[in-house]
Each structure stands twice: as C-alpha cells, then as structure tokens.
Image 1 (tube, one colour):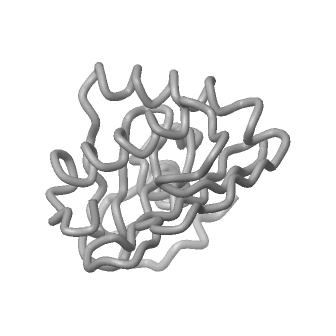
Image 2: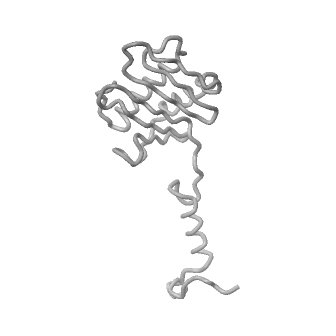
Image 3: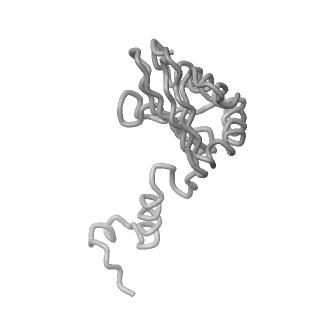
Length: 158
C-alpha cells in the first residue's frame, strides 16, 4: 500500500507506521501517548455570597485536580497520596445521597452552596443545611483545603 502522507514526511525518513503512532498519540489527548484517561471521581461547583467563594473543582481517580479550569488555574495539579485516598473515601461515602439526587436546602445565613456530581448522580447542600450527612461536611472541608493548598487559590469565601 503506498504511503499517502506528504512527500516531506517520507523525505524526513518518518515512516507511515511512526506517523500513525504520532496521530494515535494526538488522538489520545492530553493524558499523554499511550496513557489512559482516568475517570473523574467528582466535580464540585461551589458558589457563595463572599469574594472567592465561586469555584469549580474536578478531581480524577488518579489524583489530578483542576480548580476553575480554563480560568484562573488552567493547569491540572496533583493531590498527595493521602488526599487521593480521602477523595476516594468521600466519593464512596457520597454514593447514597448522590444516587438519590438529594438536596439539602440552605438555612438562613448560609455563606456557601455546593453542587456535586459523580458518575452516579448529584447532591446539593449548603454550609448550614439541616439534615445533611456528615460526608458533605467532609467534602466541604476537602474542597477548602485542596483549593487553598493544592490550587493555591485565595480563600476569602471560606
């Protein structure tokens, strides 16, 4: 089968096999050549009434975290091993409220509101929601710590 690539590719001694491999790497995307895209653990959307409270945080199974992607910190950051374990535990503990798409309304005086999605569904809660499960408070604290310590975001909203 003749090489249908441009003559310059042949002149540069790049074989069709090598170029096909390069094209495959491009198709894989940002995860790198030969890499596997890791699934997301969860994405958190935080809003609030104070400066610095708006945040979008994506956490993957492999410990990659993105805070406000394509805005203030477009580059992914990496969680420590203990933070990855904490994120996985939180995701497992969120299973019931997320799969039931629960919503815990904010009480008067609320400052922060959260919307969390994972592969099983979503949950909404506020910093002072009545009846919210303990895992939502763990998640809120996790988000605060990671935004501050890993993403280096100012935390006036916390």
